[in-house]
Amino acid sequence: MSVLLEVEGLSLRVRRGAEYAYLLERVGFALEVGGTLGVVGESGCGKSMLALALIGLLPRGVAASGAVRLDGTDLLALPERARRATRGRRIAMVFQEPMRALNPTQPIGRQVAEGLRAQLGLGRAEADARARALLDRVGLPAGVASPHTLPHRLSGGQRQRVLIAIALACEPALLIADEFSTALDMGTQAQVLALLAELVAERRMALLMITHDLGLLAQVCARALVLYAGRAVEAAPTAALFAARRHPYTEGLFGCSLHAGHTAPGTRLPTIRGQVPPPFARGPGCCFAGRCGRVEPDCLPEQPPLHAAGPAHRVACLHPVVTV
Ligand SMILES: Nc1ncnc2c1ncn2[C@@H]1O[C@H](COP(=O)(O)OP(=O)(O)OP(=O)(O)O)[C@@H](O)[C@H]1O
Ligand SMILES: [Mg+2]
Image 1 (cartoon, rainbow, N blue to C red):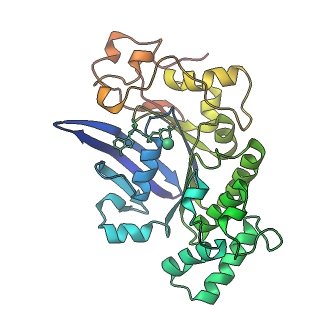
Image 2: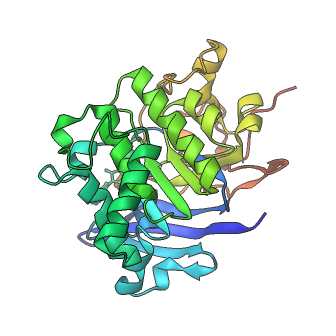
Image 3: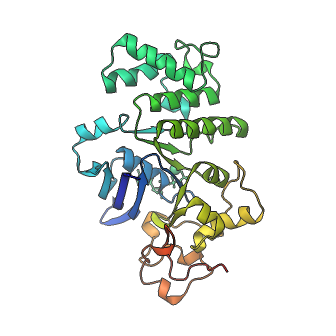
């Protein structure tokens, strides 16, 4: 299968006076055309920063290095104008807060059509017709909401559907969902995510989904990437990860809920004792050493690189968990 997205040695650096720190450090992974990747990790590990780096919306003061290649073109090396053309057209993102992402004063049909006109250069009539069809497809047919409806008239789940329609409008090759739909109640969340997964399969879009929910990871994503303190510590097919975690951090994340047998949607990551070190407090050694029950003296001098731990399974740990 052909590679769509190739992230190589991606680092995000911030400065504070003469000091600097990494929000992401040499993160690398690949995503195939139509592939699904789930990114997991505790709060503050850099998941949203990764998403923003991919879509080219990093906050001021965050400097990126490395490569983010989409169809072989390094997006980090493109001038902003060309980068903007990629956004929405080739890569789209659905955000967690639909009310913030939608314009409250504009009818939903117009918001869907706007992207089509701006990105694809369609005329008004054609854009409106396509917007109508998209709203139908995401479960907002005429009987439920008209293109003239304003966002505040809709429920949370319906607004998320509008966001999906906007993201899909230009048929992106990659869709990024950062904690999408977590603001909704469980039943609505499951429905919206089922729709997203269905559309991804139907359109052969690749999906990068950031989640705290192991049930969703298992249900939606073929592969998983575990981030800890800005570093990729484990990458594997999701099924392999559910069968056996190699990194003690992943084991900590998964352990409690798996042992309790809860992997249905809504299963949140359990908490691990201690906290993710903030960016300016991260030392040179293994970033998890301070919280790890398997730590040895050789963990401290340097962060171990990812190495093979099974078929398509990689782990960054000198003393990985061994299961028999
Ligand atoms: N504009 C910024 N400048 C400097 N550091 C930032 C900025 N925004 C976020 N950070 C820091 O970057 C780190 C990663 O943040 P990020 O939002 O990517 O975490 P996350 O994994 O998405 O967490 P959550 O699960 O809570 O959404 C955090 O330590 C955060 O404090
Ligand atoms: Mg986040």
